[in-house]
Amino acid sequence: MQLLAKHPKNRLNRRGAITILSAVLCMVLLGMVAFAVDIGYVLSSKEEIQRTADAAALAAAWEFADRINDGYSSADAQCYARNEGCTYANSNQVGNLGLTLDTNNSNSANGDMVFGYINDFSNPNAPFDTTSFNRFNAVKVKVRRDETLNGSLPLFFARVFGVNKQSVFAEATAALARDVNGFEIPSDGSWLDILPIALDYDTWVDWKAGTYGTDSYTYNKESGVVSGGGDGKLEVNLYPIGNGSPGNRGMVDIGSSNNSTNDIARQILHGISPDDLAHHGGKLEFDSSGKLYLNGDTGISAGVKDELASIIGDPRIIPIFEEVNGPGNNAIYTIVAWQGIRIVDVKLTGPMSKKHVTIQMAPAVGRGVIPATTVGGSSYVFSPVILIE
Image (tube, rainbow, N blue to C red; front, side, top):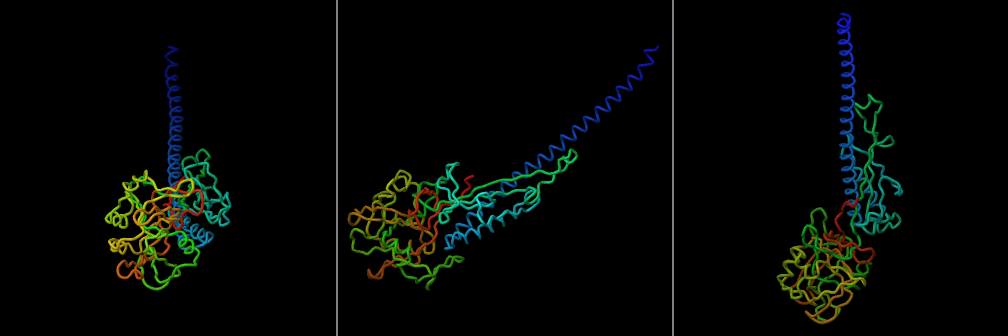
């Protein structure tokens, strides 16, 4: 009877223990759910802040390139680029907040937005040089939510355990090649906007120095239209002298050495194809001496006048030759540089003295760019901006 009397009490004790255990388990489960919710929120915010860093770096790099192309100094181009990066950071929310960037106007190497020069995009350990102002080709951006900028992420359920906030940050580096060693078949198989007509080195040097050329045409960037009247940018005539002598300008064979007028017309309109590049081993690149040899013809056929006229105002890249050996279609051109240009006028009929293919310097973004580690092999030729880190 005594054992039977104790049995209900034992049952009550067990019920109490179960109740307590259940309460503990509920608290543990609630804690796990709380942490799961907050961890998910933090991870989601980290993805958002990385996208924001990527967008800000790309926007800043493109703006920097555009301003450099328009003739702005490196310092002024950076100013516009920093503002553009800030605009993109603010328009990409992280945890429902558009972020502010520290623009780092002094370009301190430890700042949140730093412009510099990288000589090898494929090397993650390549130095980031902040002293070569005129060669800057990259921007590093750090975006953060912490106690010093934008405020740390506020947590929700984790506050029960005394964890109120979480700092998050992300970094990205965007870059473009400004020194070009050559071109290869782009990974997407697209064609290259290289015009197969070469300009001589001496004219090129004087043209760049502003001591040779005329200013008779204006290009409107917004409309893409060329009209008469000067715009402060010198033009030169790409048309050959016409005597067939060594040193003369003319067309180069990119592709088969037996390029027909139809081949040249296609390249003028649509660019250099992967099949064309395959004839050169898949790339057009300077050798260790900074030279590239191409067959050519010291003349420009009137049969491509319509094609040349149809691309007036469009950016193209032309080769610059140091010397040419051999007459007519047996000419061998020694290419030493690349120049971004746009055609502003064409006339290939009538007297020889009236024929011309008039060009201005113009920024040309080329796919398949092979970056150079030295200066001087290109002018106004750039790769697209890419994320390298």
